[in-house]
Amino acid sequence: VRLTRVARLARAGMFHELAHMLRGIEAGISTWLWTLVLLLMICYVGAIILTQTLGRYHPAGFKRYADVHFSTLGNSMFTCFRCCVGDCSAYDGRPIGVLLQEHFGNPTVVLYSAFIMWVSFGLFNVLTASF
Image (cartoon, rainbow, N blue to C red; front, side, top):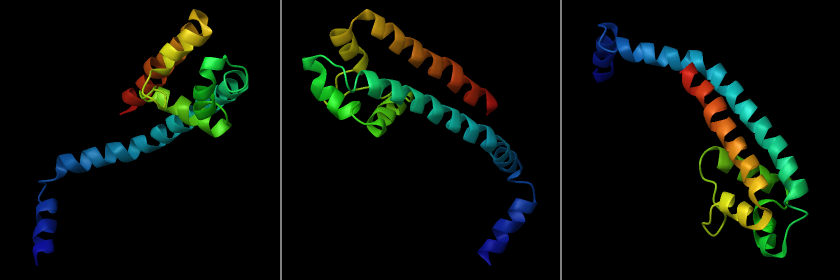
């Protein structure tokens, strides 16, 4: 009985705006999925580079960070994804950007910053604009 009352309210147009919002989400799902695929591809390529460079050739002080974050492709991809979505800290809470500067110098930080800016300002703005 109560369910039929809710159904009558829905037919009466009370949820008209909610229906528009749901149709908008439905229309944007394909864009969201393609953005996710693009983000995963970017993280995959970045993870390959990070595993081959930071995971294998690192200074002695960076070894424990490299073992946790860059030793395997999966670890590198997860770290890269975390950096893209804003949680770019090492296992002990230190920012990975600062660790890269300490152990590898300023050119690494420039590349790191360019990557984060490209993903944040480029890719995520496309996702935001589509909704």
